[in-house]
Length: 313
Ligand SMILES: NC(=O)c1ccc[n+]([C@@H]2O[C@H](COP(=O)([O-])OP(=O)(O)OC[C@H]3O[C@@H](n4cnc5c(N)ncnc54)[C@H](OP(=O)(O)O)[C@@H]3O)[C@@H](O)[C@H]2O)c1
Image (cartoon, rainbow, N blue to C red; front, side, top):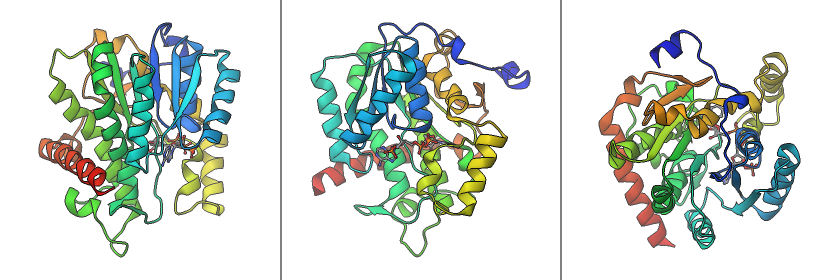
């Protein structure tokens, strides 16, 4: 892996193995990296189930994925990451299908959004991390019996913008006055990464579940639509620069998550609890990403919050 980092290891959709017989759940498959991942996996024969916030978003996306992949094994389930009840309903719906889960790609997300508190919890943390934590908890028994299987979260180098040490309790319950959208995004993405590390630890070294995380690159997608600069000149410049000038399209950005979700190397090289950067290169973890206490605290707090939030309803 170190050699891969130094000597420019790469990965393309041609490297995705045949996925006939594999079942993949992709959260946030209606746009961007999630949709690009869905198309690539469907093209290789996987049965792909995307999540969408509404029936109409789901239908529209499935149609696009079917057309682009030429596969009919694509469907959607409704799930709003901003509502734990909706996450539970999706998991219940999925369980009725009696299907395995070989790939759980936890991709849905928002970035740099204006202040939004969901039941007292900072919105980016809730949508990007907490809902995925709960979904994994609910689906883990199926993933375990489907092994070898993958759990992949999409983190971000936005982690580097967390300047001072996280205090989960305070940061999660931040007030509107003290809210900093950059820090909140970075923390939610740090949570995505620490979550797979803790999951890996809890599953143990012999587990057939390979849980990893990645930063996809800085990619032109709809993620800018809900950010603080949405709709303005800044967004136009960012989109043009990233997409048209640099060629950082969703297809390219999806490659690292596709590597972690599908490549046989992940199993042959026993890649678990790791962080990858584009394209398919291991990124050593330092600072907060290597802090075990933050990791275990995050798990405990997430578990408690899910319980409390569901009891409140
Ligand atoms: N693009 C980048 O440069 C970049 C860099 C680092 C990390 N990432 C991460 O990559 C992941 C995918 O982002 P993207 O760039 O592909 O953005 P995107 O084009 O905006 O796609 C985000 C997906 O998440 C869904 N989503 C957002 N909020 C949701 C909610 N409350 N409930 C359910 N689904 C929701 C969106 O659904 P709708 O279609 O209904 O909006 C969409 O399917 C995110 O986790 C992001 O943090 C992206």
